[in-house]
Amino acid sequence: MLKAIGAAATVPGVVGTAAGRGNAPTPRYAAFNVVDLGTEQVQEPGDSQAEAAARVVQEVDPDVLVVNELANNVQEATVDDDVPTDRTNIEAFVENYLSDPQTPRLEGIDYEYTLQPDSNTGLLPEEDYDFNKDGEAGARPGDAFGFGFYPGQYAFGIASKYPVDEDAVRSFQEFLWADMPDNRIPLASDEDVVTEGDAIYLTETELDAFRLSSKTHVDVPFDVDGETVHGLFSHPTPTGFDAENNFNGRWNHDENRFWADYVAGAEYIYDDSGTEGGLDDDASYVLLGDMNAGPGDEPLNPAAKYFIDNSDFDSRSRPTSPGGAQRGNPYATAEFGGGETVDWVLPSPDLSLRGSSVVWPSSNANKRGLADDVAAASDHRLVWADIAARPGSSGGGRGRGNR
Image (cartoon, helix red, strand yellow):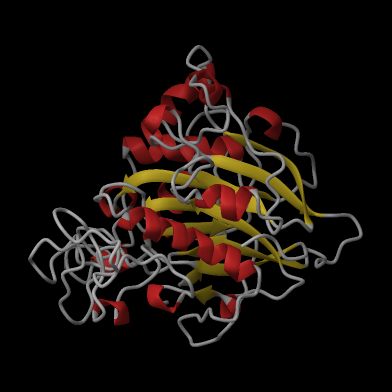
């Protein structure tokens, strides 16, 4: 899952409050959903969407980056012999785009470490199930563990300048939704669950197969200047796209709840190697990714419950942008819905949040064409945060938040 690919990066131009990071910059973390970025786009140079996305990343120069909705070509190749696998898609994106300056004033970024975790998207169970209740069992995309027309579609890749403790990486791709206590699974046997029309629900038999993570949940320990910081990466299923029993909303809720339970040290959790339990009390961590959840999302509102109102995450200073403010939501990270907050970079409270922003210029501020590239790259916006260890802190002292 991990491979070293290059040399240390240089520091290019930056955006907004990112300017002037100095000779010893604060570690910068970023999440960017580059919508449905496919193998054919990144394995060769010259794709306009990939170029635009790379330009946005180079403006910010993050030390740790997650690219959501980047296809996993190794998984895709299991159903298509023509898909190249000499290098992962995240490696190819770094080599073909991020390491190549996208404007004359920028410099390339040669991330030394990359990870491309396996994804549940488009991945069918060994037995045929009719998860989406359309009358046809074992058919993509609806009967895969996560929505996808082929294995690995809508996956994600991670790029880092910091070394990774490869042996300590924990993935939770196979964790069963039914193994989460007090889960919100809609069951056919529940009297209050609608099982007619387009409703989606699970049968008792399906409980033994259905996975919690629509892509995967991964804990990646980074060595940040001699200290371990856990990067917590996932991309929960979007809400909506179902019937009144709110299957996807319930699923999204519990996918987001997983990280709140994990950082609180929940004992029910197990990873793909069989190791049980969540994080230690003294662990430092940063949550990154498109969580498909924002404050005020009703009726379940997982973002407020598990991120904003949870003292295990520091959400006191949330990133903003001129483009979001222009749409009436300064905290917006995506265009749809008039400007939604769905992408997050949240540190543990023992870390120090020094600055953050959403890369979204206003419509009348197209300096050097950045606004054009922002729009061409995705309908999401890159979110970044500068996060450092507090002076004199060795971690710990977080307390346990609301779960």
